[in-house]
Image 1 (cartoon, rainbow, N blue to C red):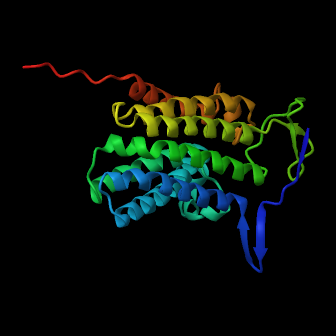
Image 2 (cartoon, rainbow, N blue to C red):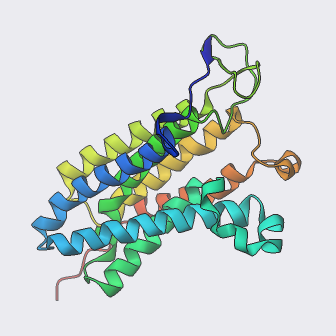
Image 3 (cartoon, rainbow, N blue to C red):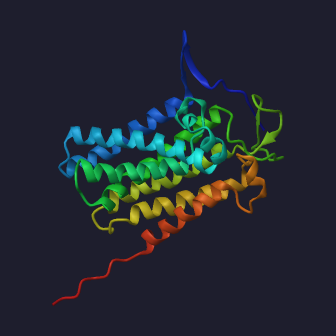
Length: 260
């Protein structure tokens, strides 16, 4: 059993604090930019275009994650108080929305900045996006939030900043799964990007990344009260369409053109 009482702040200088959660986002974006730039440069993109893709991704992640939380987890409150949707510093980000936000941002970049095969671009950003999700879940662990259900397991964590109940470290389970799937995805992309049809890489990430998320939800406490009346919780419900889309992309085979 692990006693967990980590200060969410890594360092504080006067009124300014650097939190592990914020650092997780910075590392995620840095890693994503480094990975994508290598392959974008090979495609003829310049550094300015790569920087714009990063900017689009940052904005898409934050907006998507925030709207995902507000609209799926607390719609009644935020539709009544719409201005508070802008209060990102108060917390409330949803990973499904963040992933969707990255996809939409990639589409907008492709439309407005540099036209290229969209599915190729989505393949490129998929694994880094999931890797970033793993980092964010470590940030949640440092914040002692998104708690697991009570358990007598030897792997239980006691989040003393919340209560003294031994719980599944669900944040850690989710993070490790995301890291595993994304690292496999990065390897597959590096090795087979010139032979696999476009769409298969993002299909792999969506299928196995969100299948893992679906399973981890069984070890989590519900995030909001209305989930107690649901057969599957909101995290699982939102994961299902991601898995279905992933399977379609992963298994779909483009027809071979007939010789004329």
